[in-house]
Length: 66
Image (cartoon, rainbow, N blue to C red; front, side, top):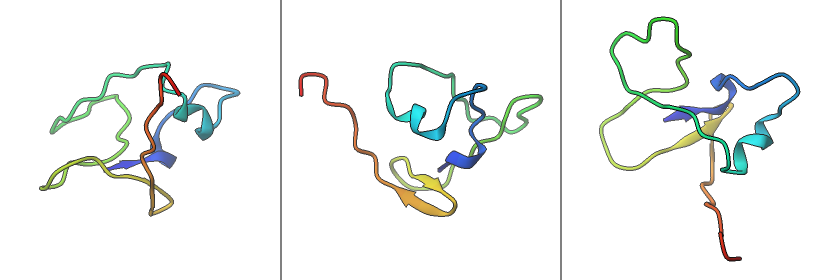
């Protein structure tokens, strides 16, 4: 699960800027994050869930040829 309010964003950016899909970040699941931001957790099951303020956010994807 990824908690959007915990994702660090650049100065001047908004959470809506995360929806475009053109910028990339490295995501890793580790036991000790060290100096890196913790933006969620891994739970048993399948798939990815994105939440904002505890509520699910739909994953709409990107239509490259739409």
